[in-house]
Amino acid sequence: MAGPRVALVIPVRNGEPYLARMLPALRAQSLQPDEILVVDSASRDGSVAGWRGFGARVEVIDPAIFNHGGTRGWAAGQVNADVLIYLTQDAVPVPPDAFANLVAGLYAADDVGVAYGRQIPHPDAGVLARHARAFNYPAQGRIKRMGDAAELGIKTCFSSDAFCAYRADALAAAGGFPADVIGSEDAHVAGRMLLKGYAVNYVADAQAWHSHDYSIAEEFRRYFDIGVFYSREAWIGERFGKAGGEGGRFVRSELAALLQARQALRIPGAVARSAAKLIGYRLGHMESSLPLGIKRRVSMFPGYWRQQ
Image 1 (tube, helix red, strand yellow):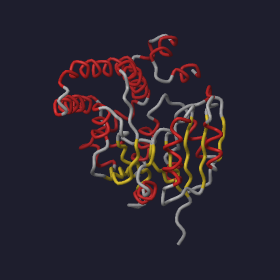
Image 2 (cartoon, one colour):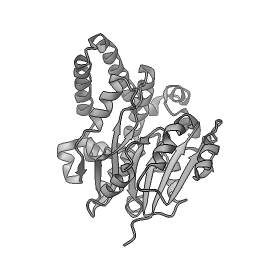
Image 3 (cartoon, helix red, strand yellow):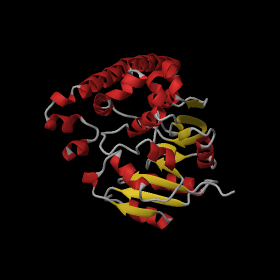
Image 4 (cartoon, one colour):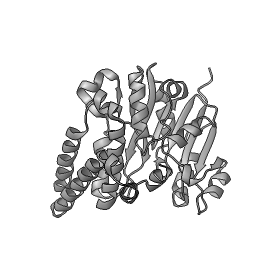
């Protein structure tokens, strides 16, 4: 019996620096996609030439119309596949069986609609980036269903389309990607799938290098956007729980990681980082009362506000 038809979708903008690691990693995969679609937001570097030279189909779009949900949804309609694997340009699948394990996880149970892989820190990542990956992507995988919400809270609908696979029929049944979101479109889709009776599978043996060493200012901006998302998508908190308790657990774990790494002198900076996240998140919840110009300045995705 033939396996599912698989398409790989990668949104790209000025991603040439990642190609040296990404392209060999894709060539090494034991499961090769039937189609690769790169959606390029008018890169000014060699991204388009690099991907076309690799054999990918590249569609160039105006960056002014890029939207984390809408663009991914548009891309889903441009391919013919049973399985949609999404990657970001800086998420590099590590072992040769990364795609194969991810797709196997998608079919591990009849009700699984989305499977997301384990993100591990880049080799040069700092201690805080390493801790963030370990906290959110543990070594043990798990299938999550709606009945787990009482235990897991908002982590029930945690997913990441930096490295994930969707069953195309389940994605369509859940309404597809939201057309207009500032980010966190993966949590939106996972939440809708869970409400429709589908399961979310965290596949720990499907791995990709993906981590960021954000500055405190970048963390503030990123959490502002997260706050905007959860303020506008209040149904997620109502059905799955609030994020507050999870944030407190993360802070305690991060401080313990610094102590274990004998970097106690960095604790004041970590506390300041956590405060910036909290302030950004709370400000994001208040975005409806903020001037548009302010929102552009503090957001990680200013182009979203230009669209507004």
